Length: 324
Image (cartoon, rainbow, N blue to C red; front, side):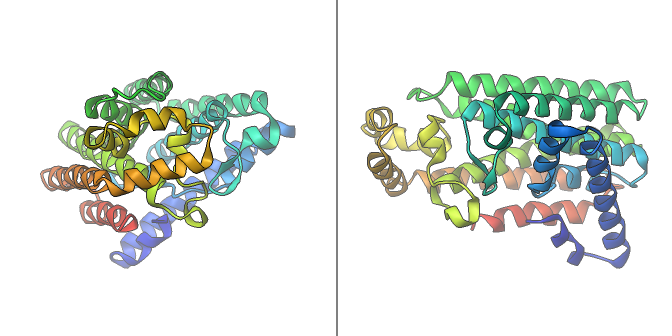
């Protein structure tokens, strides 16, 4: 789902407001990455140019009752945090490609990639600080800390065959869902929607983010490389034990030793992927993802209102459609 897809969803006024907001966020992001000269500016620019769905800024805009400067700053800030984590993750994972293009680490080296990610993080908090809302800055800061903790847990869990569903969901919350939730909270908070909406939209974002991550982990095993921009089973190769793998290990424990011994054997790993696909764990993971999505939409329906409720619900539905 691309942000532009939203333009066909509702009224002309909604289309104009959301489109104008997204355009303003994109302009802010472009100004940010253009602020530094030389190779650091080039590296930051390549991260922005790689694109992405701009889903997190979209959540900020749809959770707000207007698109005035504080909301635009928040939308830019959450995307800059997201961009920073992608750059840092690619260093840790030694990834060559991101969305089918060379990563910053591949093009500029690990040291430059770390510096680029640090710059993007610093700029994110500079953006949000300019809103004058210390509580908003503290909220995003806590989430940014959690992103690092989630990465640490994922590294600690690499090739660990005893990862539980709860372990996996904790990682997903730290690495993905918390940023969805804070995007929704910031949109509501900085547009003056009140504490009840802030809390309810945050809960919506949490369940939405968990569903999104599970569906994305399913796509890692079932997707077409030409579409996803990465090899099928990349998580398996990295030793990342995702929900389909957890469920597969419960159904067929004999897959576990092969997962460890096959880590450097492409033919063997392809066989492990096929075994995972055959054991029913994909369907089980999809059921859990849809349960979280249904919870998110129910939470949205219970929110007091004042934001783009119908568009957020439509956005949630479009996420599910993308993985079908």
